[in-house]
Image (cartoon, rainbow, N blue to C red; front, side, top):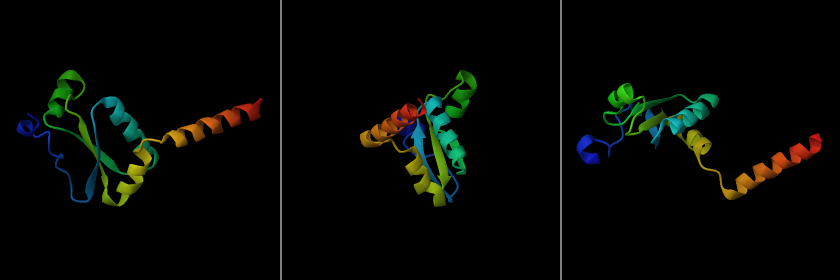
Length: 104
């Protein structure tokens, strides 16, 4: 079915851009867009399949969206959106705990 509607292919995009990721809902899209804006990384997103038409009718796309960044920025963007490891999360939690206890 995905192949029939073109969902198995990356959306058409300019040659100087590369696919960063495909998101499945508006929350993911908003979070990643916010991260990229904060890092001043140029990007654009494009709904998959007939997602644009569905978004007009339903307010969101059921088919997901592809997010593209310039090829020169792809590694930086991937690093920014990668999931944190358990160790990194623990280090962040410990740092926040340390900051709180210093303020008291």
